[in-house]
Image (cartoon, one colour):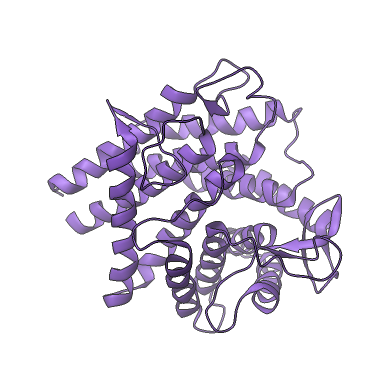
Length: 354
């Protein structure tokens, strides 16, 4: 295969974005990465377990693009850092955090064939079902152990994706059964039947109310990924059309036509766009024609804006709004979203040149 100049450019940009994580945020063990750049005392007080899970995912994106680049070892480094800083345990109090970790760990299994990683993903799945699955407002997964009454897309979305993928690997129906029930709950409870827009959660204040003011890209991405993974496992219904509608609605309602607008000041919100790009990338191979062209056009416009405004002197330093140059402090969650979007752009450009 001969790469075009465009595909080479975006592969090089993906490499640069990965290296920029370490350039800007690299920290001595056991920290691995500082939470923010520039770094100040106090910035590392929070152990961001779920950010590190997405660091694993980002390194595995690079490994798929560049199998000889040592990126699997970097993903394992991030995995081991999570376990070390989590007192040797896979588990914490947040079901969504653990599921992000399980999804990345299952990808390690897919990349290496090592059964250890599959075993860990299964252990996390079983743990969240045992401690978080309940009948409050319908069978579904709670957000965390201290709020078993609070249900949301960030917990149930990755449960669907993990369940479908574990079913694919093991053939065990129990994984797909939980995935289907969780997806049906999201659809009934948090998805607008007219537009496909996905709300964040329900019953946070124990009042049965949906949090309609929290309109985040990652909820849309999770629902897209969940629908596609269930489609891949043969679940009935036109789930690709369902996913595509949510993707188009997300771009229309949360973007400005070129980029997604700012969702917050960083922190956890910085990672939200990355989740959308990751699962949009899962959807795109199932689309064609004008629908695919529309969604790819947004990937192109947003990553063009990202690189126009965030790359300086061989380092990518993005803010939460990719249409602007960021001069203030940034979190590495924000960096990870930019890396994931750049890796998707590199994948699309390589596919076109194949």
